[in-house]
Length: 109
Image (cartoon, one colour):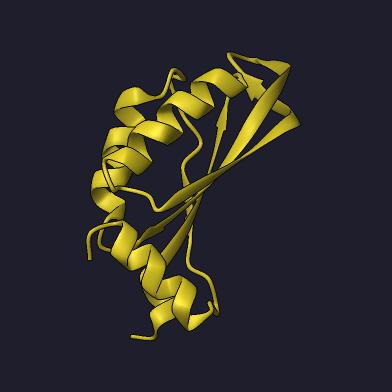
């Protein structure tokens, strides 16, 4: 498998920056993610309990690996305040060799 195929980019929204920061920090400290970028100012529009909702959220972009992903997703689900958290894992088509190596090393691989 190519080095880029081992990486996962995980998107997850949070209700506010503080919760995103706390949970993101915990996942990086546990070496389940190499990095998390927090993007505030996201507006989400979605159906919930039979009505249309809108919310200001923070989008977190995590970098992890395919091997670390199961434990990462389990811990993120455990810590997340939402009943149904958005956890979307994407496999990049390409990644710089040095960056892929850093992500693997930062997640204990």
